Image 1 (cartoon, rainbow, N blue to C red):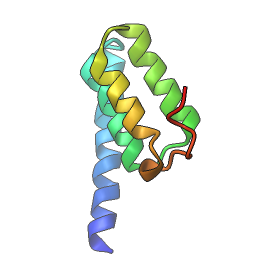
Image 2 (image 1 turned 180 degrees about the horizontal axis):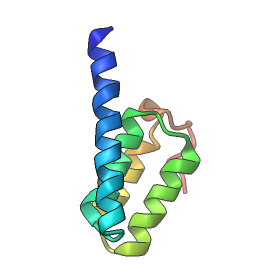
Image 3 (image 1 turned 180 degrees about the vertical axis):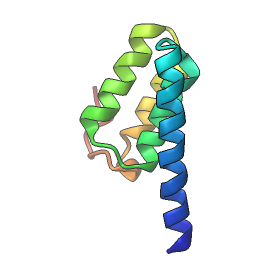
Image 4 (image 1 turned 45 degrees about the vertical axis):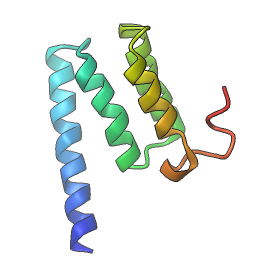
Length: 87
């Protein structure tokens, strides 16, 4: 239980750091991409994941890592549905 608690605390700290980075530079691809990873760890709802992906795609449409991160985040093992990965 302590391991999961610590994991959750670190995800919250990471989210706060990423939010701060995006306040300073809303177009920072590394921070935008990091939000997708944090979303997986926090089992964010599909709408949140989609909104965060949209921010990546709008900032730099050919940024392949953003697409891969989003695709991974909607897989069933990360709380996506069976048909989530089918666009």
